[in-house]
Amino acid sequence: MIIAVNTQTLLKDKLEGLGSFTDEIMRRMVRNHPEHQFLFIFDRDWDSSFVYADNVIPVKTFLPSRHPVLWYSRFEFIIPNLLKRHKVSLFLSTDGYMPVHPAVKTYNVIHDIGFVHDPQSQPFLINRYYNHYFPIFARSADRLGTVSEYSKADIVRTWDINPDKIDVIYNGVKTVFAPLDEAAKKEVREKTTGGSPYFVFVGSLNQRKNVEGLLRAFDLFKQKGNFPHKLVIVGECMWSMTSIDSEIEQMEHADDVVFMGRLQPDALRDVTASADALVLPSFLEGFGVPIVEAMNCDVPVITSNCTSMPEVAGDAGLLINPHSDEEIANAMVQMATDAELRQKLIENAKIQRQKFSWDKSAVDLWNGMMRLME
Image (tube, rainbow, N blue to C red; front, side, top):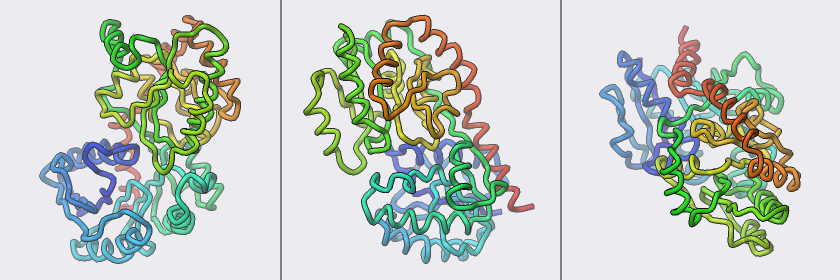
């Protein structure tokens, strides 16, 4: 069988969440099933590291996938012709995009539909494309996957999709995420904050991540006591940092905020594992990979009490209302002063994190795909 895969998110050193999902799962899937051929459809020159085995055939469309007009042309005309030419039996998309009228069996993974609930989080044309086409994609696909029970329920409720059509395929975590010893942590803190303890945020800097609220909460936290902590923010801005810049200008403790940009996995592990706690106060997450990364590093978690985050954190996280700067600040105080609480969350995480494995995710996705071929 020839299985075509939309691999437009496989970008060297720029995987982000969707790219990591595709990379980790497809790396395992092609090796687990050498009896099948996999046609990887890239939108630009591919890196050889993404050709995981001899049963992968990489191809490139002559149009890149960089804005709505090109998305339409690529998925409505170019990819359907590729599927026909290569006599594909099944098309897999791991990032939600697909032809409106696929001529083959199609399995589509839609990670979340935050763009429905937060239309200001993307530029106008992108948001309009998502809200017009993704409901059509969800109905046109023979089967869907998503990354949490929350996202499944949201898709069912918002677009009136049959829940029996949707599989939940959790994200996993890279094996590099593991605890550091105290000497290594001290070295990382020296490089990162001049030796000060710190809280870490990991994620793209967009409105739904609530970075502005985190900055305000950090200021409140610093005002509640003589805490030496800094706030380390890891991630890149998706569209505009105007609101974040404005918040920084109003902060009393802006000098204690460190922006690090995007980090590669080894460096991200070091910064995460050396933190006193991860703080992820998002308004909406389809999953929340940094939560599991922190849990695997034996770092306690503060995260929101809404959408998928309670599902992922379980009893291994301190849950807060993301709309309350005071709650976020008080949780940071607890983490800075209550060693017993921190240790309890770490111990709980050792159990909770076992739910999330890329090996299991690859098997779950494959089983969902094979249900279409029965």
